[in-house]
Amino acid sequence: MYNKIMKKLCLFYILIFCCTVFFGCNFSNQPKFVKGVWWWDYSLDKTYLDFAIDNDVNEIYFCDSDFENTYMVQNMVDNNIDVYWLVGDKQWLLDFDLAKKTVEQFVNYSDNYLYSGIHMDVEPHQFDDFEDNRTQYIYSLIDLAYYLKETFPEIKFDYDIPFWFDDEITFNGATKPAYAHMIDIANRTFLMSYRDSANAMLEVSKEELEYAKNINKIVILGAETAKSDETDIVSYYEEGKTYMNEQLQIVCESLPNNYGISIHHIKSWEQLKN
Image (cartoon, rainbow, N blue to C red):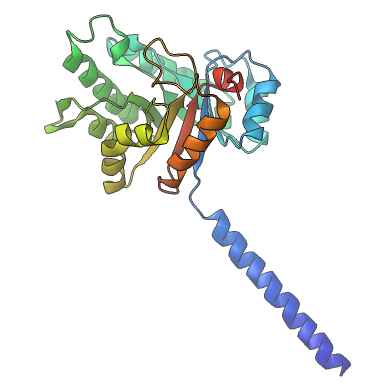
């Protein structure tokens, strides 16, 4: 009788162990749903990191041009957050060598292993004469993205683009919307889908999402929390955290498992009214 009981107990524990291993491995292999945040001011203290952790952030795009805050980056990594180096300058569209030198700084930085890649924020529409030279500037961004990827193939480059990047651009013999060219070359594309409701965010992103799904690429939708100089439909500034969280949950449920959302930016998000 004793032996039979012991055998049953052994079988029970073996079964439990096997289930734990199976389901544990299955869970760990699930694609990560991104919840990211832009972090523009590297001087912000750990209060903001605690806020990010409390809000389940798993990626931070950290702007530290001189790599002066390695301690904070290490702290982020220690809390299981993937950190990307956040850089960008519109002047790079006029001189690719400036961009190349900046990326070389990253390559030569001794602790660059702390970063998962580079998050590029290069916005051609910041030029005063953008509307007069729209096609030229957008073409330059696409060209820059290909140039940097060819020059630094080992680096993961993510790019921010506005949701209205629909201009038909011919590049390398292919004519397609600008967003399609950027999704083609970027490791991931971050769409500045700045609208203050889930339906509106998804509506302005639908073409980019569909294109990315068809070619097995990743798009992350962006939400704005800073006060907008435009209309009140751009940012969640007026509505506050509770409403934004409800809307972003709806967005999340509409996206593939390996997509996600990112919030602009950590300081205005933390200061957002409830």
